[in-house]
Image (cartoon, helix red, strand yellow):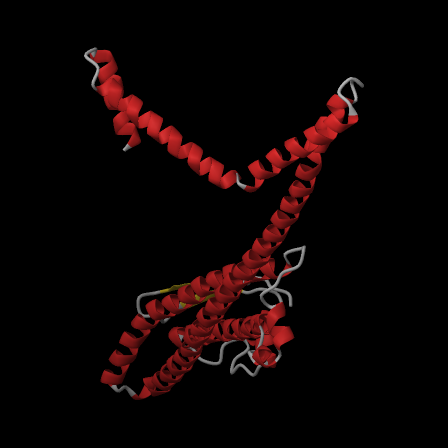
Length: 306
């Protein structure tokens, strides 16, 4: 799908009674051709069929918002196919693919693009609806005045204004529906993105845990050979120690190393307790000293330890 933005501008100038007027239509290439193919009730390139300024303005506005509606509908269908139709819940493999990404972050980039695109689309549709609401107020006032006057020569214009306003309101109502559908799609994209991040975090956590276990196993293997390598490196410098002394030393150093490693947590806890005991007694002795400097220093350490 080719996504692009069109600028459809209507510039007008008229007198106070709207008897003499000029409308300048700035339209993208092929814009009116697409409208004619879709059955619009006027072709701006062939001239206007009504002499009323307001009726012709309504006609051009209807053409613009109708084309806008077709564009938003096509975008809604395209994004719907990207995010899935909902049938994925019946296929576990297809559903799982929506929450797992590849090395190129294909799904992450797609979800981020969809969220940003729908946010910007919501703003554009809101501006279109607000522009129509602002423009229809003076037309409605003019229509009420003309209906109150009940002049025979204006009956055709009143009918055309009423029909044009009705058609524009129907199209604007459909734009509001499309805007609500975009909000639903954006919420779905956000949910898929969050699910993708959660699944990625779980996979990364499992990979980190597996790597940590492998490193721990490698560490245990290296610890097993560490005392043996230490003893043999010392005995290799001389022959006076003897072979049996090497065996006894290797067994003793190995047992001491293994006991220390496998009880390292308990040794750390005991060391912390001993340190806290010595620190507390030392700080209390400093606070009981007669010297002001020692006493102030003891109070400072006491506050830091709380």
